Image (cartoon, rainbow, N blue to C red; front, side, top):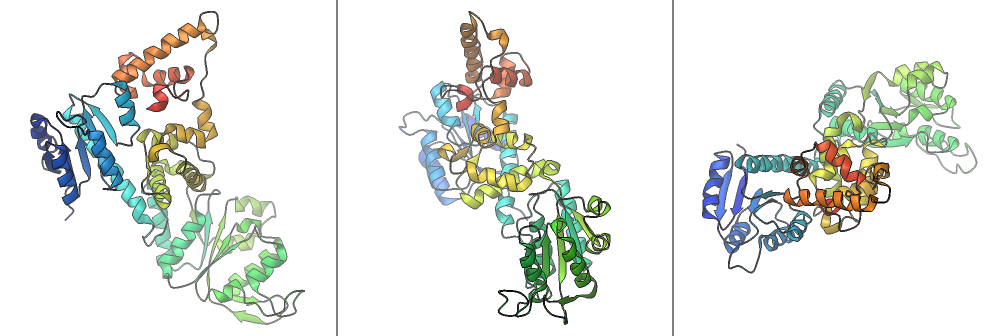
Length: 458
């Protein structure tokens, strides 16, 4: 039986603490503390998934923010939601830049608190799936979208069916080699996996890598060399980007696949070999066949079992899990805001998972206070950054333009402060739609501007 998520509420208001268990009914285990010291004792003696934390404690020199810093430094692996009546702008900025999961102003709505906790629990599950994926049998095959569930079903089918020749089709960077390694591991993790990149090695070397050679076959061949099909010993040979293979090698490969025999370069002897073959390509091989760039008989041989690896655009809901996985590979103490995750999900990712991983690798060491925010995403992805560049409309240009801009900026900044950093609420205060709010802050240069820009700081 799975344990109930545990919540620790630390607040000096006994009336509020008495309501917390009622908000979550029997779906969570709730512990309440009225002082910072009581909260520290609870944190040091038990594990909590979520901490509901007040900021100000009368008669106490320490604040809830001090306690949050202790929690973060001790790596308690819990999410902190601040619930406070704090209204000072400088404090709000400090809070929202500290890396807390969410800030909820008092008086708080029980439904808002419950929803915030439920969202945090869901995000924790995503993070833990990402962290555990590295040790799972399927390696780095991460994601729980419909596209990934279908991919896993197809992988299971080819493994259980004992397919000897498999073709993986998908765009560059989708993770075709990860899928190939997953298939090999599920089939027999004790067997070897030998990758050959058909388009990355010179023609003569490719012949030797694939088919082996005998001593004296060519200049420099001072000893016999076994082919990839021989050394794999019943395991998988992975032929990456097989669409780039020269036509004369295609003919020789076809014979190896058909006969399960290999003829080393410089030899007339055929050697029996035991192997399974996974081929991969990012080009349309059917078109290549029509254009006489790829042998039709070889295509049908390698495509006896065919798997389409989805692009990242087709499974954007997996991006949060992938992001947490890539962050965890570098630095487990770095976090990312929900807004930054949402921004990453809006991008088309032409380079797919490979591009996402390299983007996270670039952001992690550069982010401030170990938190990846929207501005970090914009800096890492120039296309998104352009959307967040200050663009003043022509209607604002003229003799009184600067005064109009200053007045408009002040109005939007005030709304944001009143909304405690919540942009949806700020739009409601201004009585405009969220879309209009975002368009206007871009025009006013509040999304990425000077450091005093509240939008930038939030």
